[in-house]
Amino acid sequence: MSVVEKVDPSSLMCTPTVPPGDDFVEEFESSCGFLIGHLLGFCRSAFNVDPVYELVKPLCGDWGLMGQAQAGWGIAGKMCTGVGENFTALSTNTLDVWEGEAADAFRTQMVTLGKNYTTYSEGCDLIGELTGSLIEVAKSAALGIGTLISFLSDILERLVIEASVPVVGWLVGAADIAIHIRSFWSKFDRAITLLRRVLDAIEKAIDAIYAVINIMHAIKVALATVAGTAAAINATHMDGAARNQFGV
Amino acid sequence: MSEADRMIAQVRAMLGEIQSISEDIQKETREAIKEHQDYLSKAEEGDEERAKKARAGELGPDWQKIQRRIDLGETSPGAIALGADDSTAAQNLRRTAAEHTEAIAEYQREQLDSDADSAQDLQVAYGAAQAHLREIREQVARIQARPLPTLD
Image 1: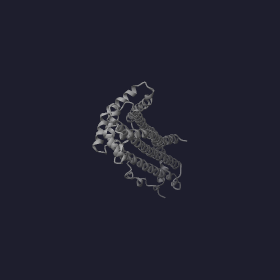
Image 2 (image 1 turned 90 degrees about the horizontal axis):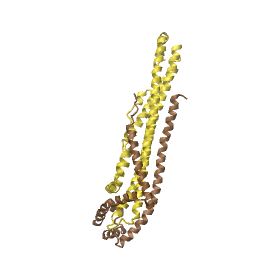
Image 3 (image 1 turned 45 degrees about the horizontal axis):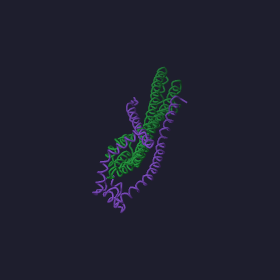
Image 4 (image 1 turned 180 degrees about the horizontal axis):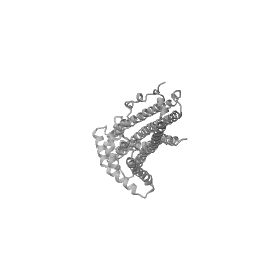
């Protein structure tokens, strides 16, 4: 009988990657710039606001890096699962060769360690899922904000056309101008609402990540206690443990 | 259920909330599309009115020339506004629009200060956008100020 790893966790370790061309933000930024770029000067003069700066830029972080982080947490989760399985396996494959109080204590601790690593794994998976969900929220928002930017562009185009009439008093009685201005701010507000949804998701994700980290800290404290207890038990039963060479 | 399991269940619930935000965004986008279609159908009535005046020369010679080309499918209001049409008449119209920009800003200020019922919709739309813009700026600052959890 020999103790062998059931899983080699190091074999699971690799550099997290994301598929090329998956950076939706680059396309979002360039398409929004294309849609409204020529009207920005007019927009800033008429409304003292820059839709690209206010609505597009806040979403333009490194979402590709977030995708890598998501994959990285997935890998860490698999590695923790492997470590957990190795500890759990020690509780069964020492049964034939090691008996006694120390052996039982050892196996109990190995099962506990296995469970703790399973929880670690679940924590890693959860952070990966949280990251993935944030990316999905940002993608949906980019699509929605891009659509609203194209609507703002439509409205600004119409305002430019209204303002291009070279007739004295062109604005007097121009009820359409009020409709265009109102529509501009209404669409702008809708885009802000979408941006706010992303920020809400980020705040929730941070809360959730704090909760996961707290779980991991609690396990870390528990692991330290387990290691201390195991050392104490083995020390008091050194003869039995040494005789059996810990089942190795 | 252990404390860790209970906390993981809580985090799973938070994850569900985040996932539902994507659906909310898609729903709000669909509503915006519908709202814009309504706006466009109303605006198109105005477009036709302007085209008639332009053909009749009521909007000046540049607009009359441009409208003739629009009718022939040689240009479009979008091409004029976005600068894609570089004809002299289109350049003149864009220059006029740029000169009138301040008048639009002034018109907006008057509407925002007006007590007239007709100005209320614009006031509500503007007020909501400005208030929400301030709120998200504060939210961004709040998120940025939050320390990240340590993984030691």
